[in-house]
Image (cartoon, rainbow, N blue to C red; front, side, top):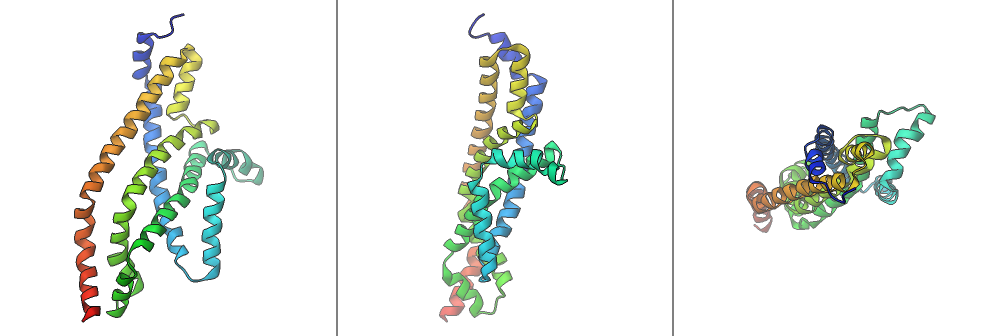
Length: 238
């Protein structure tokens, strides 16, 4: 048997099962990262509370999901929960597992970004009577968002690679589709090369998009946050 067969490679490159698995990988990455941003941001805001139980919750949440492997979390959701009377479909287990696993990393990014905003911005907002929630929404969060964009973009790449782990609970994303193809043709090298190329293309496309967003970052966010912050600071100095 030849080590490499170009006809097999091009056949696998456009195989319907591979393309369906590729699409599953893409939407699963975007959906779970979006949900992780929502959950992680909420958890990060909880960390800013001075209420001790809120701090304990934040520390426990982040420590638990960062300390346990995603693979264990996925298997627990799909295989262990049914013994407790909770049955999740493959898609539900994959989405919940990937979201919960990613959310503590997002929470740390958001918390750090908010903490990086100068304290003077908070003080200026309080001095002119802006309510905390309004200050967070209109002054602090836009500035924190500028700081959070680069590391948040990196999380997309990590989440993209994490999606391959849902194959262990029988979800047919790109890696499992590749594995199924291998089981039928026994051509491992060509199939895995195809999967590698698609992962590289997705990562490269996202990297280019991330670079574009980072270049436009200042225009998108600075124009909305800087004027308000400067006005607030000026009133305090006056």
